[in-house]
Image (cartoon, rainbow, N blue to C red; front, side, top):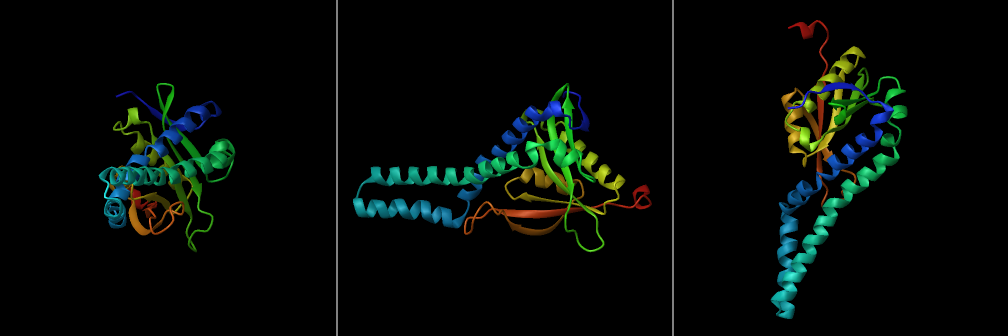
Length: 227
């Protein structure tokens, strides 16, 4: 396990941060594909259409080709939202991380420095319209390089963000993640985040939309944190 330390983002990190972000997001495509295969409507479609082709044509070859084509289309469907999400982010906050996260009050962007190379990232921005009387910070972009997973980097990044939230006087940290990202969900829950609601990823239209889970971490007061 290589040693690492958490620090704020620097301009020289930009290329590596983008590579890490893109690979992390696109790494969810296979899990999305397998998740979609578990849906009843997907199974009915994958069985029903080739079966209809077989009954009409009497050709097993056409039925197999039909099934293969449908699987390919499903793979492209699973791939599409992640590719679109990456493209949108690269044109928005990830295009100028310093401007979006380091120059704006109450925001920040951290990296895990693993021997001079960025091995993980996380970002935070204040929620624009929080509940009345609440000051909320939103967690974004948590990603750890595949070769550095299992080294405690994600936990260290989240702890750094939570401490930042506490120091900045936030009451809660919130985030939204998809049901596809089971490893991330387990980590958030283990670190004290609680489920507060569900939704659908806007990049995946119904009836084949991917569910998302909203989570929240309550920032304890200095007095509470002593116990």
